[in-house]
Image (cartoon, rainbow, N blue to C red; front, side):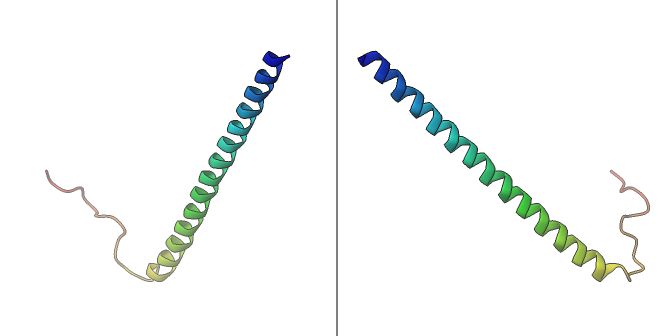
Amino acid sequence: MFEYEIQQLRSDELIRRAEHSRLAREAVRQGRAARREAEERAAGNRAAGESHSSRPRRLRFPRAA
């Protein structure tokens, strides 16, 4: 009976660790998504502000070494 209880405690601990890992991964994923969304918003604002410029986005010719 004692071994069964130890096994149940181990199982419960593994389940708690797995849930904690899932929550941590989800938090990281949400943080990345929020940063990506903020960067896209900022890039859209920059693009809208610079769209009237006649300057080319990139250099026409590659730089010499």
